[in-house]
Length: 163
Image (cartoon, rainbow, N blue to C red; front, side):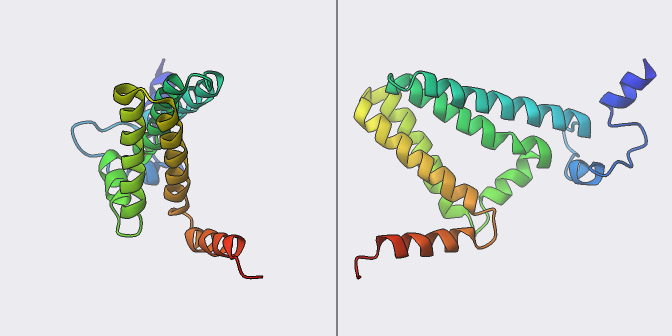
């Protein structure tokens, strides 16, 4: 029983290689042990990926597709809050480097939900999901150094009309 308690409390000695990263910002009302954070991250990411996979099954019904895909995206992105804490996650999302990408992504998520739930337009829902996917890719690229610049230069070269 003691070994189970040590497993769920983070290994007992607290000297694991990932403990320092996972314990940063763990103070507060909702502090979780490093093991609980990993389980929360894995469960949230798995649920998000499952919802995105299930959305592909109902692709022919754009409203259900939009709901499943959007909630799957939000769960997958929110899963990292288990690792670094919600406050640091919000701070990273609002960092000047990625504030525009975050705003556009949040707007596209909201637009997809409005098109699916309120407007009930299949064409607008599919367009909103395409915009959401592009915004998610651009947001994700903001975490990779020089990735957005590289993609921008590639797109400029591909779309250049001069021969």
